[in-house]
Structure formats: C-alpha cells, structure tokens
Amino acid sequence: MLEIVWHGRGGQGAFTAARLLGAAYTLREGRCALAFPSFGPERRGAPMRAFTKLDERPIAARSETERADITVYLDATLYVESAPRADGVVLVNASGPILGAVTVDAGALAGELGIPTPNTAMLGALAALLAAPALDEIERAIDLYMPPRLRARNKEAARAAFHGISLP
Amino acid sequence: MNDGCAQRAFLSGNEAFACGVRLAGPKVISAYPITPQTVVVERLSEMVEDGSLAAEFIHVESEHSALSCAMGACAAGVRTFTATSSQGLLYMAECLPYAAGGRFPIVMMNANRAVALPWNIYGDQSDALSQLACGWIQAYAQSAQEGLDMVLLAYYTAEHPAVRTPFMVNLDGFHLTHTYEVVDIPARADAEAFLPPFETDNRVDFDEPKNMAFSAGPGHCAVFKYKQHAAVLRARAVVAEAEERFARTFGRRYTGLVENYMTQDAEYVLVTLGAVAGLCRDVAAQLRRAGVKAGVVRIRYMRPFPDAELTAALESARAVAVLEKDISPGRAGAVFSEVLGVLAGRPALGAVGGLGGEDIAARDVHAIFDRLRAGETGVYFIGIGGVTI
Image (cartoon, rainbow over all chains, first blue to last red; front, side, top):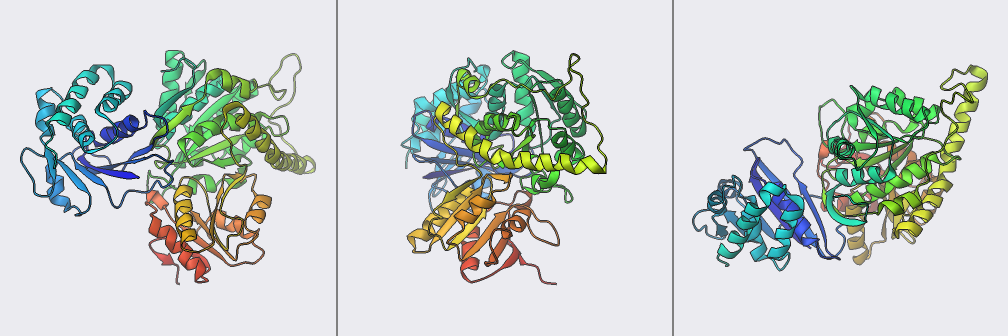
C-alpha cells in the first residue's frame, strides 16, 4: 500500500487533490483507493490534512496515516512549522529549493493559468513521483470529477507541474 | 451521470448511499439536513430536481416532522425514505416507536455521530445505539459499497410481508460518509429486478377503510408488542433470503447478521461493528502470523440481535473483547452489554473508543488484544483507561 498525506491550508484544495488522486488511480480495474480529510474544524487558512491510500487490494484500515510514503505540502510554511519525519519523500510547493524535499513552484504555475489554488499543480507534480496513476489518468479524473469550467485550466496546471518538476 | 447503466465511480459513502436510494425509487423523501448526513439529502434533492428520481422531496422543518411526514406518506401506500444523524435522531426519537408500532416499513439512513454535550459533529455510534429498543431493524455498514447495497437489502427486508418494520441503515459519520472509495453502482434494471414494487394493505383506502395508528388498552397492547417482536425476529430469515437474492442479481454476497474473520479456532475474539472492523481484521491477521489465535466478529445487525451467530462464532473463544464507539454511563457500551448475554460467563473486556471522532489506530487494537490475553476484564476507554473511583 502507498500512503500519501496532504498538508494544506483550508481553501487550498488539498482534499480535492487527495480525492482526484484516488479517482485517477482507480480508473483501472483492480486498483483500490481511499481518500478522506482529517476530521476537524474546517476554517479557511487553517492547517488541515488529507489522506490518500492506494493499493492493488481492498484497503481495510480507515485510520489516519501515521507513516506516509509521500508527504505533500501545499503551503511551504506548514513544512517548516510541522517539522516532518525523515522517512518517505517530501514534496513541497515552494519557489526555491528546500533541503531534503522535492519542490515545485505550484503556486506560480497555477497563478499563470489563473487558478487561485495550487492543488492540481501539486497533483501533477506528485504523479511524476509515482508509478501510478499516469498523467493521462489524472487528466481523466479531472474531467470526471471537476466542474466543466475548471477542467481545461486544471489539467494544464497538472501537466505543467508534471513536466516542470525536477526529480531527485 | 445517470443513464441507468451499471457504473464504477469514486464516491463518498454519502454519495454512494444517495445512488442506492435512487435505485430503490422511493416516492416520497422527507428530510432535514444535519452533518454528516447532509450530502445524502443534497444529492437526493438534486436527483429529484434533474428528473433522475421521480419522487416528492419534502424539506421539512425538523427531524420530528421528517419521520412524521414519512409515516404519513407510507400510510398512503408509497415507498418512503428519510435520513438523519445524532441530535436529529434524538429529536425524532418520539416518532421512532410510532413508525415501528404502526408497522411502516420506512428506510432511514443514520450517519453515526456523537451526541451532545459536549457538542461534537464527528463520528461515533452513541446516537443509534441509544435507540436499540425503539422497534426498528438496525444494520451497520463498513464500506460505501455495503451502504449502497444495504439500501436495496433494507427495503426488501423492511417491506417483506413477514416483517413490515422500519429499517435504520447506519454509516459511521465521516469514516464512511465522507471517505471516498470505488463503488459499483448497479444498473437500474437489475435493481428493479431485485426489489419488488412496494405493496401493502396497511394504508389509507377509501374503498376498504380501516383504523390505523390506533390506541390499545391493557388487554391488547402487549399483543401488538408481541407481534412486533416476532416480526423483527422473522427478519433474520428474510435478511438471509434477501442476501441470497442479492448475490444472484448483483454478484456480491453478504454474510447475514454477522461477518466472521478467522473465528473457527480463535481463542481471543474481538467483536465490533461499522467501519473500524477492517482495521481490526488487519490486526488479527498480524497476530495470527505471530502465532496468536485471534479472530474478529463484525456485527452487521444489532436488531434483530445475532444471538445464535455470536454463540457459534465465539464457541472456541477463551475471552472476548468488544470495541464500540459509545458508552452508557454507569454501565458499559451498549454492544458490550448485549454480547455478555451469549458468553456464558467467559471473561469479557469492553473497549470504548472513537468517541467524538477520535481516530482508532492499529496500536489501539493491538492493545485490546494484549489486555484480553493478559486476562483483563471490565470496561476501559482507549487512550484513558479503566475508571477508578
């Protein structure tokens, strides 16, 4: 099982990204996923978490992830504040390099496309780190589960980040 | 989104449940929104609006009215649906035995949530487990798929002439209602083949007028209650019949009032219900690899209560623990109290956890088995311990 923990601030779309990742992964038969937010107060700007679990077998445990394979920070200030564990890959939305983390300037990529949230760009960057889902599956999930007026721009953001990330 | 064909989708438990309701085709839906149930009634109102569900959606002013309205519609002879949670369930509590005693086979979704005070919108099972005696059938799902499937199974069972009893389908708040997963949505034609149209003579009929929702004095009241009790007990066989029919129609098989995991030779068995059961099975599998004869029973139905099934599943158990998300202060969790009845005096440990949405981790379930194997009995709160006074 591959476990991804998303850190974001309320309004950045971290849970939407967590859900789209699960949807993209499970487009192929035989793949299973769970996606859920941390169940706590929901306030714009406040730190929140979301979880995606991916596996090729049914996933029984619905508990929060304690040891993530990949930890994604939609906001670099949260990475600094939360002093992350050493284990697993860390992906941060940041304009410059951060020691021990893979970075992508998702905020800038999204901003150029007129998208106020870095979530779909981070999703594209994450896909570059994963064997599955493929980028085209991410795009299909956006087509299936985002409102029509948002699809083209968000697919573009995912594509740009997928190709723009410098792999470790 | 809905052309009536079978499809596979990545949905929350609430969204999947609404798809199940659409397939069952109630003619009247009366509901009041409450977290974490809200998305069910939002989706259903959208389905009514877009014409994919031919039903009257009545947005009532309270849960008391939601169930009263459902009873009225059911008394008019049509299939009805409502949904609630927590304070909403408690607010409609006066109407719950009314619907059961009136033998109105309403199906209700309850999103399990803590009850105030303290005020808390997150998941636990205190709401439904406080209403075991209200006369309703009670089932607990462990996945979005099971929730969806239970809608169809619930209507089949509730409306069966041998049962005619309302049915409460419980989904753990957030852990099921707000968790997204892959769900197979059956084709409409298959759902219609599985679930016969609702027919009842327990309805208002100007050609054959009858007295409904009447009073009964001391001489007759007990007879009505006896008949209710017998009807819920008869649901045991109807659940089995419905699940067999369901497996033939949809290819998914359920396991009756309980679901057993490695219980055949188990010495230490954990009994639980709802979404946390999967975690418990994972832990039991780990313990088995370490040579511990661990097993898990997931209770799927609290009413009718699975006495015979639990007796059989716990036959080899030296000690039994119960994990549940509720507490009846001054006693124990409601499930623990009920399970004691089949243990014939064997050691029993009650673990109360997940209250107010607290996450239950693998180490918490390991700790339950550790305590059980150490001979501990009584009731304790996960993360706090047993009460000392």
